[in-house]
Figure 1 (cartoon, rainbow, N blue to C red):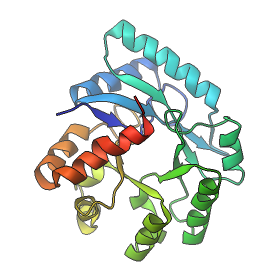
Figure 2: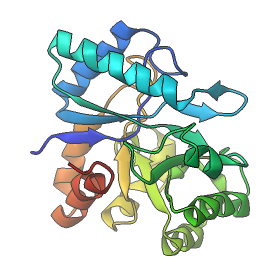
Figure 3: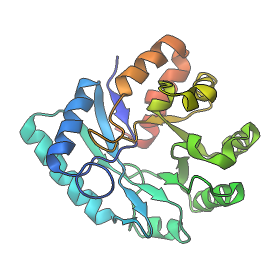
Length: 237
């Protein structure tokens, strides 16, 4: 298998509700390497009123984590990004480079309150599109307003990209088993998978286990598009 990329995680030490310390960050990275991850876009929160982590802080933290990886012999490439909770003026903040897109691209990982109205969610992403960005809706499975399948199709027709957490494929409790997450992946409705890892204890990595399920249950073309082709549109190397 080719090395995997995790495009949604919270492993920069002390910036948000993810990894607390540099040592925990390095533990996560060692585990990531063991699970065949070779590239990571780190995505600390920017959430007005909760986590105001600005671009400069993220870039400085990524530079230090890269240095520590080199010293520790961890061969994973790290790229700066953020998971941005939508707010009025978000597009302008991106234009000013106060907050970050994914890996310096025009792709933006966006989140909303899980109970937000559908029109608010849709219009927020349209606003970013009007500024030339490509919105990726983080962990779309969480939004109550998207439980109606036709709304997901409307978003897809609008050009919105959908990110699901790897853990949704593992069906570890009854909530996951009651919902059609696996079917959505099989049908090609999901554009990206990310771990949303927050450290060694809170939402740890299960990426390789999910990859095995994908290998056994999803057509090669769809799996490769989600895991590799779409990632290359963000990380152009």
